[in-house]
Image (cartoon, rainbow, N blue to C red; front, top):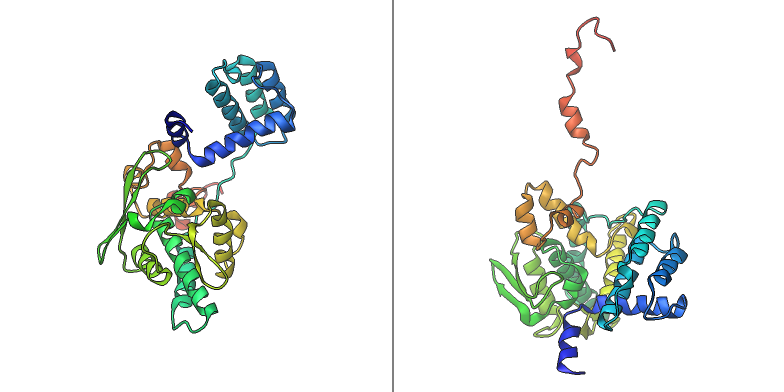
Length: 320
């Protein structure tokens, strides 16, 4: 790989590269398309999968095809009017309702933390005890860091021990060389009297014996801590397992994004103004931020109730 290729690859996130490669394989191998493609060919491809694939999936396939043509120096057929009209028509005839992960409420976080703290308590005498304690310490650090810093799943997976700067009693600074929207950023994490992400991280570092490398790692059945970071795809089943063990219903509604949405909803309900919230999380776009906030009164019932006249205010003879 040349130096130029290395830098080009570094400019694109690994998840995006994998998604684009999968989209190109689908177009060529499953549908039988030819590259470079024509606008009519791409329009037929969209029409064949309309209603079978989600609209956002089709948009991702178009982005991958567009990128391939630009990288190879060919004209981009995805920008042709016929392709745009077909995609717009699919959106009209097959509207997709966006499915969002349920926010992890602060009450659920308390239940999860209590459950994990109980597993951490006491002395570990057997391999099973050590495994249970280490897993509880890791999961507690994952949940509290993910919630209070509104981290995405890929950001949690990239955290490294050497990027942490802990100040006892004050907080912790986490450096990430790059994020989804910026090349590098420092995240400040507060030390709290309860549900403390800093204490949870310290407990995990101690029990896991970690001094460098990935922060959140796989733990085998005997309690041995692995060298590699948790895979992002393992976060959803891990979170759902914890929710199920804590007695929380409908665990399928939750995903790794539930931590991010949960914090945004908590902050909004705690009277954080939107600018402060956007600065803290790192959102640049107001529309993106609002997608993560679950309204505490989605039907505005409280607002209506406050405006209703008291029962005794109706005068005799007033129509019911």
